[in-house]
Amino acid sequence: EAGVTQSPTHLIKTRGQQATLRCSPISGHTSVYWYQQALGLGLQFLLWYDEGEERNRGNFPPRFSGRQFPNYSSELNVNALELEDSALYLCASSPELAGALTGELFFGEGSRLTVL
Amino acid sequence: QKEVEQDPGPLSVPEGAIVSLNCTYSNSAFQYFMWYRQYSRKGPELLMYTYSSGNKEDGRFTAQVDKSSKYISLFIRDSQPSDSATYLCAMKKTSYDKVIFGPGTSLSVIP
Image (cartoon, rainbow over all chains, first blue to last red):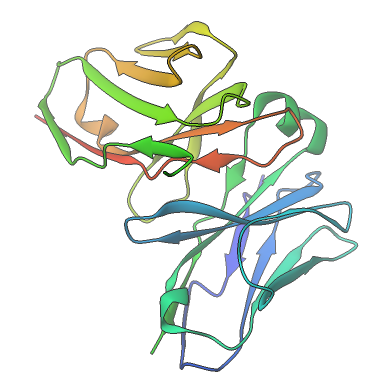
């Protein structure tokens, strides 16, 4: 069974540009989570989608946005890129009820965004 | 003060040692506690999950939660070079809440 897949693996942008990152959850998983992992800061919670709805949002500015599609895949958009947006962006999925009970998130390998 | 704190390390131990990894947190509302392991260039994977205070053992790994002190620990017995990774504590307030991660502790087990 395929795990969580993310694309692109690496992305280089310049300040002010927009970046779009994509995530395909494990088949049967309805919840998708986005985390930012910047050097020395650990995983910072960005967004949580379930059944196409935004369930929760972290303390990030509105230029970080996303959506979940009917097939449960998800997109993270970052507008007006700033240098400090350079980080590894991790997507995770969970089968909604089981994930809630165990806290288990299944992570992809991430998309590394570099802003120059 | 950050919600969840960990000593970033790096922690270096000889093979076979007992490793103790710790996290402290500030919000007493956290009830669900997890430990994730992250190998280099990989996403984190769940190691242990506990609810409220107490101990949980799984093979060489033991997780402890002390809610009165807002302190959680992960012990690794008979550590192996394959245990070399970053260990992230994580927690959430309710079963349907977002998961908050600590910054992680880097562990190296030397053969």
